[in-house]
Image 1 (cartoon, helix red, strand yellow):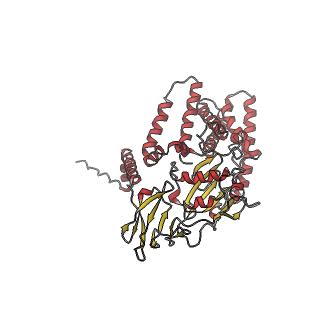
Image 2 (cartoon, helix red, strand yellow; image 1 turned 90 degrees about the vertical axis):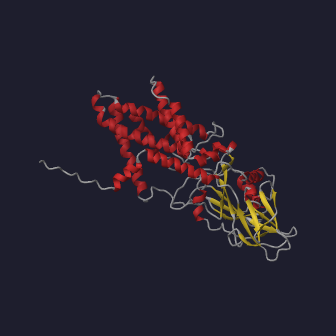
Length: 478
């Protein structure tokens, strides 16, 4: 959602520019402002910008992934800013109606602010409608981010409605202005009813737990490190992922649930394209051994999300965004995926072909996991071929008893190492050798922020806060 905030800012510029153009004003250069804004953001988040540049066709997905047409809000829902069960009642219409009253009642300086705000609200609804119908192609900014902008603008317009009733109605003759003002007051009072109802729970009816947090069946036994494949609508995945088809996205996490190190997903799917292609094969009925294909990437479980939080009747309500109808039958056809958990919000499939992230093969027998202690080092079988589901292959080396093992690449991306049979009780360690480009870019970005921080006089302000003012010495008159 964070990159989609940049789209919100651009929509604010577009909405204000549209209203000024309709009014015949020529103030400002909106295109120059938007370009300058994007350029400055690109510089001050340089590591993310570089990743975006190398993402290729998937670069545009950083702003959001397309939803399925069956799970997007209707146009009437967009007008109310409603996505899911929240805001779909009769009271959901009160806020936009009160906001619309600001356009009708505001005068003078208030009207000069209300009109651009109305333009921003209009532009945000139009863009959200285009995205929900997939009319913008692969460009699909997160709808919830667009609705957040709409909600903020509607709240400000409601405040201007109250101000216009207090200050502008008295200067007009009795007529429709007073009728609109009276209806607005009634609507504002009516808005308190659902608000007070939601306050009764202490959480404004928000779920108390997430579906991902309720999962305790993801850890395989005796395999060490493992990966989890998350499938579902991009609106309910616990981590940003990559698009397979509209309404279905995929993401992977290491050793269970998402954590802070997976908060920002690179727009470049890289070697994960292999996993995405494997899922697409299953969707099109071209394989019944999806588990074996996913095992090469060290995936032990497949989690299919339908809701971001558990659906508990009478306890908590959460928006449900079901995956494509073809996904569940496709996974059920796989001979090496076993359904271990099924609920209205989540389904978990265990991969019976899983053999660890790092595994060894001796004489073409069944692969066996190595490094089962959860680290990247341990004993390995002598004379075996060891494989690791890590990428890029050239960045990893296997050191056996302190010496590098011969490396080859299998499957186009994952490394394979040969452990000599002459080694007795070989101890191996998987080591990463890669130029720290992201670290250097992060240091450069922090340097830029430091320059800005110094340029705005923050140091002087801190000195003012932490330094006691010196008492003034009064000179006596002689």
